[in-house]
Each structure stands twice: as C-alpha cells, then as structure tokens.
Length: 454
Image 1 (cartoon, rainbow, N blue to C red):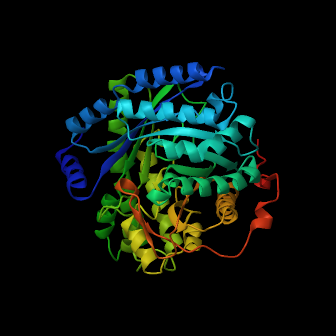
Image 2 (tube, rainbow, N blue to C red):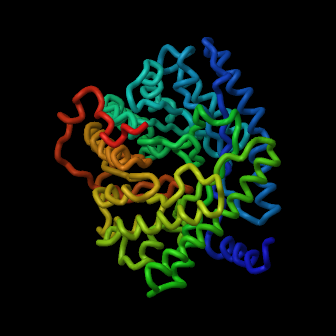
Image 3 (cartoon, rainbow, N blue to C red):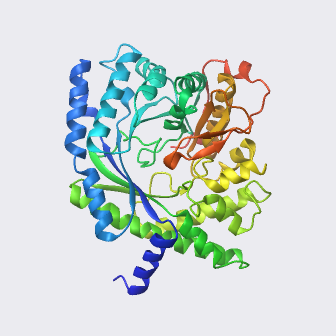
C-alpha cells in the first residue's frame, strides 16, 4: 500500500524538484514492412506506425493528468532502417524517402521525435548500411523529427574504423547543411559503442530485432530530486550519501514503473523497461552538474569529478534495480553539455574540457554528448574523437556514445543555441594536432582479448 508520506514526497518531487517522466517511447518492429518496391515499403511503414501509435500521445496525456505526473515527451523508435530498406533502396536518396515517411508519421501522431534511422556496423558495413549512412546529411536536414544513430563498435566485434572515418565526414556535411541553425542537424545524430536495443532516449533510440513487435519503454529523470536529497546529507559520510542517492533513485523508478505499466495496459502492448537516467534540462535546478557540486566539487571538472560521478551513477543503478525487475536502456547519469546549465557554467569557467569529459564517460551512462566544437574542426579530428570514445566502450564493456556539433562559422568561446530541451552551449576547443594518418587506415580495430568468453 502507498501511504500518505509517499504521496507527499512524490508531490514535492514534482512541484519543487523538476521530477518528470521524460518520455514514453513506443518501440515498433518494421521487419514485416520489408518490400523490394520503395513505394510499397513506405506505404507499409506508414500504415503500421499510424495504426500502432495513433493513441500514444493522448494516452500519455491522460496518464499524466490522472496521476499528476508530468510526462514530457511521447516518442517512437523503429527497427534500424538500414535493415528495412536493403531490398528497396539502391541509392542514398531512396533512404531519404523513408526518412520523409517517418517524419510524416511522427507529425501525424504528434510525437516530438522518431528514432531508428539507424545502422549497426560494428564489424563492417553492408551496401545498405553504407547507403543509409551516406544519406544521413540530407535525411536529417530535410526532416524535423527523425533521429539517427549508428552503432560503430562493440566489445564482441571491435571498432569498424571505415565507418568511424565515414561518420566524421557525414557529421561535417550535416553541420554544413544545417548551418543556418548552428549545425542543429547534428543534435539528432549519435554514434554508439555497445548500443542497447531498448533505449527510450533520443537521439539513440531504435527498436532492436530481438524485441517484441510493439513494446512500451519509459524513461524517467530526476536530477533535481537527487540534488535535493543530497543537500540533506551535507557533511555526512560516503555511506550515508550513497544510501540517500540509492533510496531516492528507488522512489523515482517506482513512479516510472507505475507509468510504464499503466501505459502498456491502456495501449494494449507489452511493457518493456524503465530507463532511470538522470537526464538534465537547461532549466535551473535540473542539472547533474549541480549534484556533483553538492557532493563536494567546486565545479565539474575539478579533481575528484570522475570518482563523484562513478559514485552517483552506481547508486542510481542500484536504487533502480531494487525498484523494478525491468530496468534497462542506459540508466544512470547523462552528462550532456548543452542540456545542463551546470555543465555550461563549468565550461565557461574553464573547469571542464573535452578531455575531462572523455574521462568522465568511463563511468557515466553515455559519453560525449551535445558538445559544440569549432565549425572548422576537420572530419579526421571528429573521427579521432569518435574512435577514442568507441575504444572506451569496447574495452570497458559499456555503452559509450558521441554527439558532436561542429557549428559552422563559430569559434571557441562563441555560443550556439538549439532551443527547447537541446538548450545552448559554448563552443569548446579540440586538440589541434593531426590524427588523419591514423583515421585513414582501413579495416577495423579487433575486439579486446577479454571479449572471448562463451
């Protein structure tokens, strides 16, 4: 039974501490839409998405009203499109037509993003994979709500360096195509190592081939709630600090579990997972950086930052796992720059660099996320940064990702503005030394020795 104390605690989290269910994401398999005729394929995709997701937004709004819990976003993820379009697409522009179809569906059902314009190429690219990757600059510049993710590496398979090199080029091209929006298209593109099949958060969400035909995944976020809890134990031991974070994460996840199960029941599709990720927003008081400061750092980036983030991430996961049998996705702490006011302030103060962020990604949920870099950053440098992050994920057997935004015409210290949840960011410096001879080697970096377990 839920007692009055728990009700009051939940109300406080919502009213004062920016707690919300960040997204209900409906995963839809498009494997049964495969067709050798592009027009027929797009028709099947449109029919299936519209039939499955037609009530998603209304149901999310009803649950939010009934339970008094803000449900910020309703989204869709689909089977990686490189797998769906292989029979019908003979050129990159064919994939763009599928992207347009996805965008139309997203607008018609009212979701803010649809993810899955994706390819999985950790061991090599098929012709279909390469066509989709080369279509990304056009696809994301002519659509509004389509998000793209490419899995370039895994612990089991190594790093596909041909794809890493190609993605550096595609990021540059996409930034150029959306130059009038400070390279905004790149905010809808992320590259992964060890990408999870059930991630409900954009831009990395796609519907894995091993998942049910349709499934409901929920992403919950509460950096403000955790910060408020940590404030109550200033000066306490690490044991008290850890217990406080863990118990708070438990409460947050229980709300997410309730919303997920209710959404699944009302929509008539199975419940998949709850992703408990401390995903910040530009709103004051909704910052992972502020939690780190409350733990005891003057600014994120100070000595001790990686240890503090490791503590936070681990206790969040432990609390979530106690609250739900189906915790999945990424679950932990996100450290995007543009979406976290505290991280923005740390960059402005000179406390936080890309190199320190890279070290922090060893213990956080994702990786180098929403980082603006100078517009003249070369494709080879972008690929080198991606390769470094893929190596961290591969060796450490964890998910890592990169979402870099080379902002055309902008230099270090300039500000770029993306709006909404995407926020704004100072342009950060990158290492200017050349890595092109490394990046231009062909083939793949093999899987590490500890991957050979069976």
